[in-house]
Length: 608
Image (tube, rainbow, N blue to C red):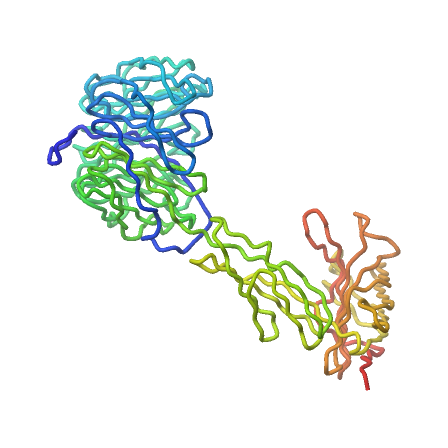
């Protein structure tokens, strides 16, 4: 293994960038990850990549071991735990970077490993069961430290890009589609000492992949715009911090343009370069500080707020800094999580199938991989069901059984029944004393956080409270008739509705005629009637036809009337249809307010 105080000049990693997004949550950063679990790797674990190497649907790990010249394969169990395979496939000396992709198009994931000492890249074709064929080596430049995989010449065959530390260039190996590769002439030059990462992404919106390369000696990052044929334009260099070792690509300020994050080992910070969308970049002020000796940076949305965050492996601090993004290219202060000895690279992906981004960190001094499982608590969702209907003085059964928690945590239920009383439990019952329409609201808690409050309503009627009659007209205003909002004119109404003795639903008849629109609504079917205790207003709901017809789906139109017996009398009617498939309501008519009637009378009949 490495001596702890050795100055590492051979530290590298291809950027493996996977962006994840989950539901919003306000969990504290300190609770973001479960306690790490370390898994043994080979000697000098330099680089880690994630992919399903055995085809079982679970994510696995591949670790390039710098000193033992091999690759550790750790097969995932699907729950965030891993098991080592019996044999580590051999590669070249000073293996420095590993990347995963289907290099021969057979559906099995393969490996590409940059070998710093041998000046080449090893390609290991996967057998689909977590094992690999013997490595085949292809020449690179002088001292390749990093490898990345992408479609660089647009032929739908994966290609390789390798950052060469001593020849200060990038080797481009074009894939033949069968797992073999051919080198291109004149590898593009970059800055001084391209080291620990070459990143591939769309930097100028021309649908041709481009390169970004961190140059540790010249303290800059090279941007090489792709021509789409495996060739690249001359590098444009952008200043960074001191000794940049790693670069990652992502939209850090939410403007749709790709940006760069660069880990600077000697200045202990991260340079953020915001993209202009045309392949050029501008630096931001005050690069965020991280831990001691940042050697690698990766990007993902760890806290689920929709803003991309940074994860930085701090080689000499033995920890990982997580910086939550503000969505504008700036970041909150770093939160540090202890890793193994000498964290050197990071890969991000969902390792346990909960749709949250987890981390795997290769530790080059302790020869292992630290796995950090995202413990972010997703909030539950309340569902109060409803609407509910019941009689005053009789219990109404409520249910929150539709509520859910993404983490399957047990939930508690807090009900507000809208009459200054509350309740608890998944299926409470409640008795209302008076007829009215009550807002019923539910909040659930998963033991850590409340859900948002979700409300429905309960219609409480009193069959003995009275009945309502009315007849007259209103002046229908612009906007009331939704199929032609310009129509106005006289609209006639007439109704009678009441509960017969012992009945649970009212009976009666309703007519509404707006002749300007040739609208004639008729109903003899009611759901409920509410007469308030003061006897000044009533509300009832039912269904009927327009001009003798049902809606286009063959269903009755719904309606509701608000009737006021006061000075003056008021009337409002809403008529709508409902799409049973998508649940959308389509309003046909609604005069919108309790409108003063222009003629006629409304009478609410109450018990003497």
